[in-house]
Amino acid sequence: MRLVLTWFINAAALFAVPYLMHSVDVTSIGAALIAALVLGLVNTLIRPLLLLLTLPVTVLSLGLFIFLVNGFLFWLVSQFVSGFHVTGFWGAVGGALLYSVISWALSTLLLKDADD
Image 1 (cartoon, rainbow, N blue to C red):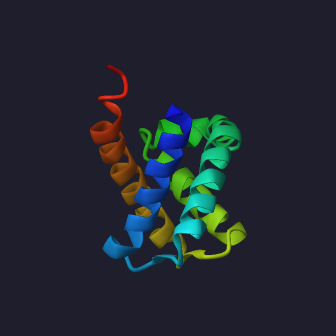
Image 2: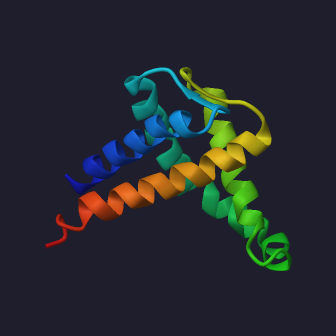
C-alpha cells in the first residue's frame, strides 16, 4: 500500500512541476502517473549504474555532478513517455531538482503518519 501511495505522491509532484517551471509540460494525470512510474524504474535500475560510472567526476565536483545525472534521466524519461515533455537539458536539470523537492515535501507531509 505504501508503494502505491508513494507512486501517487510522485505523480502529483510531477503534475505540479509545470505550474512552477515552463520548460516542463505534463498533459494529463495519466501521463503523470506513467512518467512517475518510469522515473521510479529508471531511478531504481539505471541511476545506480550511472552514479557508479561517473563516480570520479562526482567526487571531483563535490557531488554536484549528480544534479546533471538526475537531469539527464529526467530528460531521458521525457523522450519515452508521451504527454511528458521537457524543453532543453538545463530545463531538465531544474525540473528534476524541483520534482525531487516537491515529492520530498509531499512524502514528508503525507507519509509521516503512515509510519505510526
